[in-house]
Image (cartoon, rainbow, N blue to C red; front, side):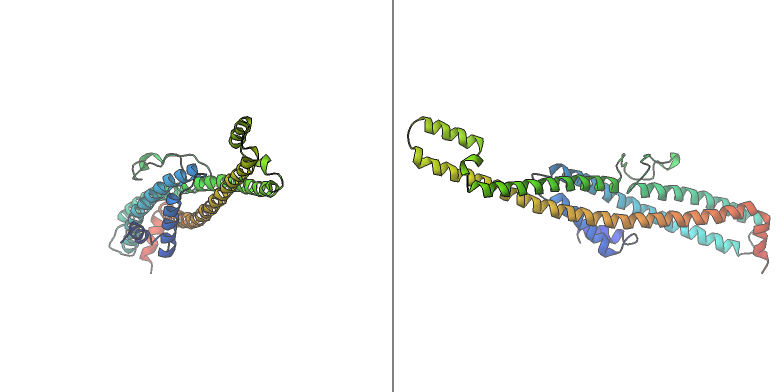
Length: 280
């Protein structure tokens, strides 16, 4: 079984297996692309890929924590419905569960911010510092991916413009080949012509050399553009799937917030709320 398959199974609770496998494959493909034009973009995605893999590990750890938390919630409801539990015992369970809820709420919010953060205030909340397995620094995965993608699109447009210009120059080259020859070729030609020999024989050869070199450069740009567009498509897919993960963690935060509100109402109600469990 591949690493991608292992990570896919581990995080199936966050996304369906198909999407999780897709995002890991897209990330991997981005890191393996070869290009002379977007080296810095590829290196940035490599860093984000490692951060994302760490995020998945932390998500799995937190999911285990949430499972324990859900069992504690279930235990509380059982005790609440058990008349043998005293009011003080129920109240103690309520306070413990509320404290655990607040910690999980903070962790869920901070974990979500590893993906995207509008505030970009960085860091963990005091006592929660040690939970995440590896520090992420100030990088937010989705923020950085969007920044990389925006930079890439500017570069793609720039290369497109250069290709359009080069194609126009190549057409003009047929009418005036000599004017499009590289500076180095012109200098070599000038030196040769100064020698006073072979003027007519080598003039056409130099023209063809310049045209061929220019055509090769244009072809390289077009090939690079294909790679850049593939890279851009992969980034788009990654960003869309990460947005789904962000939504998942946002839902977890909302669920915990709702539970916290109800627990606080129970505690504020004190004896009157707890006493109701005896009235059936």
